[in-house]
Length: 407
Image 1 (cartoon, rainbow, N blue to C red):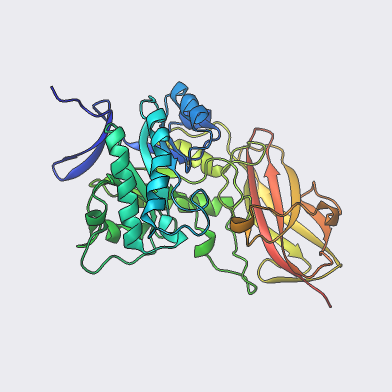
Image 2 (image 1 turned 90 degrees about the horizontal axis):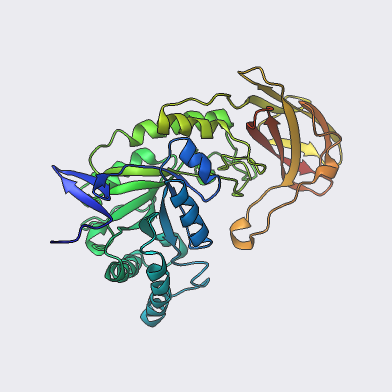
């Protein structure tokens, strides 16, 4: 009697489906390892990580909540070294050997759904076909130890398909292709269904509001962040787009379920630093479960710096006083409170891991809908942030980039 894998991709009647313990399993997931109790409470069933950091705690907590985990294995920077050379096969083999104990440790964990073999490794240098070979080599090594869980690698949507060959030919031991797709979700179907596309099971491993690399910049290069309401509208649109596919689509992981610095600490964060919930969290709750939240998050409709109602390509005189105003309301009629922050623009956080502090000493007051602040005396680019809280554990946030110019 043949053993049935714990989790596997099956192809039936021209469709791909994920099965877990012999039952169909469609991923309704969140990317991140925070607030797992809310993923479960709001109708989600899975989370995704990018590394094995704190893996045991995450797997145990997920299992206790009835969630599964796509466990990320880092391939490439930073764990493999800043200038890792994939041509040095002996170094690749050494790194694969280092992964073996990890696979053996977690392969029988009841919360494990699949292995995430690298994340956008193609962005970190190296010939892409050599990277395909490396990823497949890792996947093959995993399968020897753990034949009970699929392998997946997460990919971005910027590479053009090969003229003659599908990437699936180079990665036969990768069971599922994960796409990190934001504003380009509509483009992924070419990557799947074209003549040289993947043409196998796939899922969305990151999706959410438009990425900072996809959006209009100010004149000095700072990307303009959308309001949380605009982000939620986009998520609704993307959710509808991805679920039009019932052939090879296995589900998705929304990005980012938690609090994260990336250009700003609000761009992808669905939760505030204190753990308050945004409108995006509530959208996912409805998308996953069909249930709307008992209390809705505040809505910010507009943020401006006066005089002149500035909100686009804002240049301010260094050292001068200005006022800023946020227009916000709450559909439940809850009373609102405000917090403002002023920070230097982030550009090199990927390399440094250092984030700019809140320059609150430039804020004359920071707890009203209208405030006064001083444009920083050092010339450069900054952002003014506002956080709006109701008294029910919800929030909204927005910001304006501006340039402080010395006369």
